[in-house]
Length: 325
Image (cartoon, rainbow, N blue to C red; front, side, top):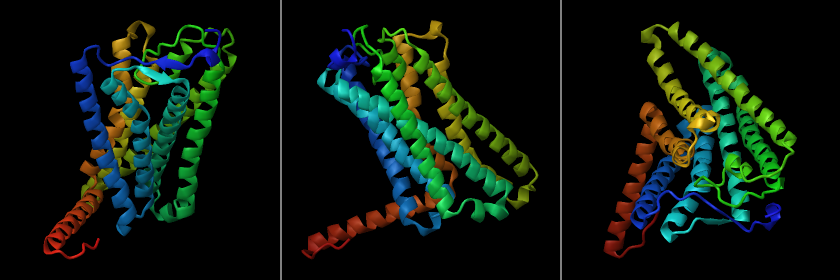
């Protein structure tokens, strides 16, 4: 294979070799996908429908849930189909799309987590200026900046990765198309563009990490000054879920991309990829709902309303009358 244009498909790394384990993998990922869809769907619907949750914090949480759905939808369905149909092939176009959307959603999510740390900083350290600094227009601009940053970063990395000649086969040692695994197939001696994009990406993630750490340092300093009877627990309860999500996202991502080469193996890389691409979107709704009473109340109200409507429809159908939503 002289270059990428001669490759019509790639071969992904399977989770298991035996048919029984492949089916177990399919059902496991199906359960995770349904849980992610249910959890994030409830957050999105509750936040959009409940007027009490029309605040900057919940607006950013809605965007985070959308990104989580995008993250899980990019990699898991193809892996499930591969296990169900006992095939590891993915088309060249499909691989390009996977690389683009993986970088897009994860970059946008990290940018959004940075914005959410700023939201908590302003809410706790500068509460009198919260409405001014985080008005509806400012929040929309920040969210658009996060999505735009993800799109631009994904476009640059995808274009650079697939413009390199690929002459070392088409076997990708991962369960989805991942840039480091694609670059292992390249035989190009020109690594200047790759190094430049790596530096830009590293600066972006380092800058966001420093901003998040600095924001929470100021937050904890301000919270510790609050007397316990004046809302210290409430302040912590709004920050700890976000801090937990950020820690999980950063720790798994750093371990995936910065672990020593001596620790690298197909099995370990597979487990680490699941930890940073599947686990965070699955646990984010659980983390936020456990510590947030307002969100729990809105979700409970939504579920109760839906169940009441369903029961009303069933009773109406039994009586022969038309069901009204």
